[in-house]
Length: 86
Length: 86
View 1 (cartoon, chains in turn blue, orange):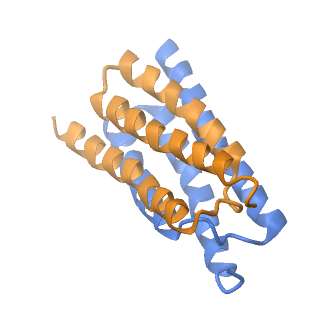
View 2: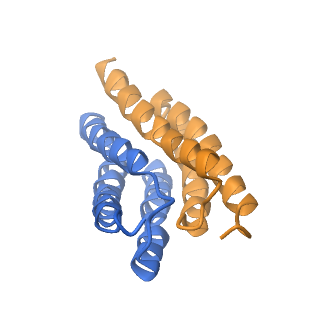
């Protein structure tokens, strides 16, 4: 049970970590220095982590990657939106 | 055993995902749009994932987070280095 708590802390941290980046892009309306390649590969990786979490029945891995994937896709969308702006 | 393979694919993807960002910063020498807060929280989260991986004895979680942590710290270092450059 206490491994689940450690996992949930880890998952919460890595999941909320994307929020400052989301806020920064929304605030500045700039994403020039952000790598699209990073977030595309990261999103695919998170989908595979999600499958892995289901396979080993570890809830923290499923929840963390599921939510982080949403943030990741949002950053990709904003990167594409502000692409022409440089 | 095959869960380990899925985990290793997931870990490889999320770990190498940081490489395009590292290369982009090295190439452009710009990191203005990158959120320092994101990478600081992400680095702390990866340390907790590493502890979690050791606790549940899952090698993919340990390896993936260990290597990704190095990339993460490197991006933090470059963000701080190019901070004045905007």
